[in-house]
Image 1 (cartoon, helix red, strand yellow):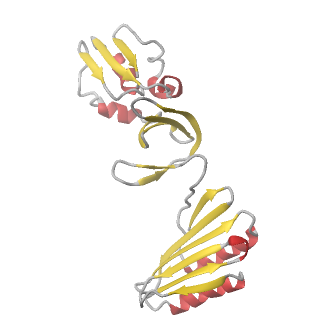
Image 2 (spheres, helix red, strand yellow; image 1 turned 180 degrees about the vertical axis):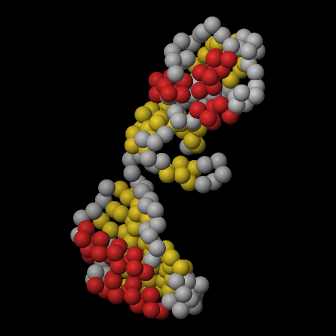
Length: 240
């Protein structure tokens, strides 16, 4: 089951499962559930490719059920906040007899908790607060708070770094295989301050870095206090 909150007023509950190719009995069982809920069924022509129906009930409740000929069942149930919660729960209980319950999904909230990865996956984070947001000359900057990962830096909709990502920073720096002592270092795109915070510990000759506004205050577990001063004994920070 996947439960999606589009807004405070509506909820989408989704199910899916595989059933035997002879799915008539399952369809009848599911139909009886909606008849008990006084939802009107409209069957749509699939030209012999399984079963497709919509169900409309009181208070704007709306459902779509699709049974594919090879046995895959998908089901979406939309209901309003004012619906009788006991009735909705009964529908869910009955559906779980026939279909597999899936992880919950929530959308349409004030704070989006779903963010894409570089390889096209969609990851859910336990985000509960927008800490910082700015449209700079170069990109959109967001810092969101996660109970699990701390503050997360998001640039143009892509997750860049979380405060818990020290191993990621260390890997970028070579995990101890690179030597920075006595060298001049230029950091581009490391405005979260994590690389700078680690690099200054390795006694380089000089580090020049560009910083993104907001990280200095809201990514403290990543950058420490290294961004408090724009110049140090072995580094210079230029604000973007």
